[in-house]
Image (cartoon, rainbow, N blue to C red):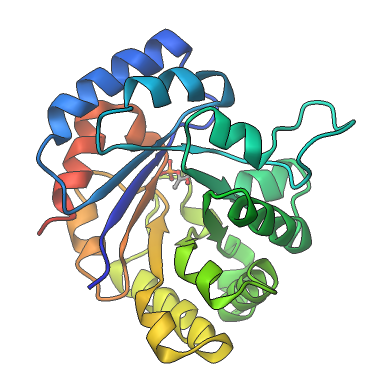
Length: 252
Ligand code: PEP
């Protein structure tokens, strides 16, 4: 049985004070949802404060990106060690906005995934096709390539610690969600790619989140699909009530 994981990607939002107000509210709303793993991903500046505030809670904290080197002349970058030092346990890697706007490639994603695992973080590895890929029938090819390259060289232990997030780019921040059947089809593909590279047993244990305009009204149906093990939520994670409703939807 895979434990559902609901993660909120705050992107470039919330000052430290706003982040702290949010997590106080969220804690009161998701109290008693222990069978679901709940994670928030604030901006780098708020990581430490949020991790301190959530120290005695079941809510985990994630960074939104990392660099693969531990230290050195890499202006503006943050290492796995620094993220762990700020109190985080997770890191999002290869989000489509990083790929689209900041030149992230499958190879850099792979370097970051390895650095995250080596540093003791759980990577949430994002894959997903663009609209033109879907319309030209290339979804399977694109997602398979991103996945195979992104997890290349990971040991069995590493892949079992890794979370995959299927995020069709056309569904991110657009209000257009993949239908539950579309999501299930790609999640099942992802699981079969992992089975081919590792084993059926390992593939059955890896958690695969769906992301792309998840909100309180569509979450339950998406999460009811057999290979959908949680959600990576952008916009709807900025409001504590909406995010908590999505967490509750994963119980059903
Ligand atoms: C995301 O950024 O990971 C995301 C899924 O965003 P949204 O929920 O706003 O589509």
